[in-house]
Each structure stands twice: as structure tokens, then as C-alpha cells.
Length: 192
Image (cartoon, rainbow, N blue to C red; front, side, top):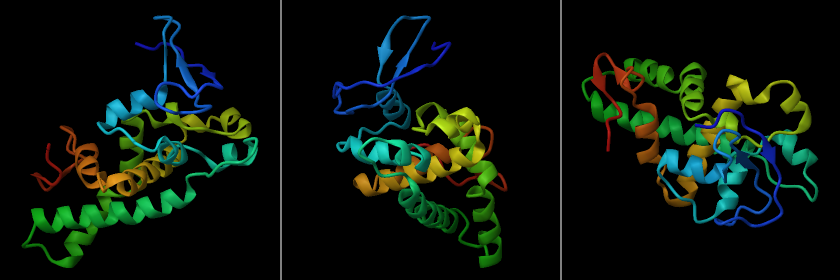
């Protein structure tokens, strides 16, 4: 288990093409691994285009400070919000065909609410993977729930753009034994 995490910039492309990607250094194990490989293991998908994943995890503060510039995750966050709303809506209509629109809307609101998405982002440890600028890093950006939500939405969009794999992943991520994927006792997002 990684006890302390330190970010180290690298100039090599790494073994999956993540040029200049930060690396997690485990002081306990003395091993170095690409954190983006670890995240892809956690979500169960491998990006053919690492740039899309990097963009999903890049906060605007990092993009503003990056030499040569890079894209931040704001457009992906915008798209991910819409994709999440759509996928959750489809799942609810399928799970509760007898419900009226108002009831479906309230259930969807609960499942896509920032509080819930923040818990999902924290469970995925998205703060570990965020590329933040110096100022955001100093103010504790890795622990800000709003940044978890933004990164989660951007990650969903990246998956959607990658291969429309987002739908399957969203169902798995939002489902948990603690009931996050349940509405009135019914599993809305089951295991695949």
C-alpha cells in the first residue's frame, strides 16, 4: 500500500505513452508506477489515447501554468455532466417504468448530485490523479469535493468519447453495496 504520495515529473514517455505524466512514488515499497495506469486498472478501462485521460484530470490551474500549454478538463466536465444525466435517466426509466416524470427527476437529482458524485470521486481517489497548479495544490485542491465532482464528470466524458464505454462504467461506479445505486430498495445500477 502506498503510504505517502509524491509527484515527480518525468520526461520519458513511460510505458503507456504518458509523456511528462506524474509518477507515484511509494516510500514503503520503493516502487514507481504510473498513476494513470493504476487509475485505468481501478476503472477497468485502458485508454488508447492517453491524452484524453490526461485532459480529464487536468485542472485549469495546471493548464495555465504548463509550459507550452495544455487543455484543461472544463469542456469534458461540461460533456460529462450531460452524459451522466442521460445515462442515469435511462437507467431510472428502465428500472422504474411505472414512475411518473417528477419521481424520476427527483431520483436522478439525487444520483447526480454533487454530494453523491463527490463520494464516488473520493472512493476512486481522484484527488491522487489530478494535475493541479501550484496555487490549487497549496490550498488543498486534492481534497476538494468540487474538484472530485468535476474530475468524475470529465472522466465520464473521456470514457464516452473514447468508446462510449462510459455507460457501462457509470453503472459500475455509481453502484455500491452501501446503496448509492439504489432507489427505494431497487438496484438501478447493477454489476455487469
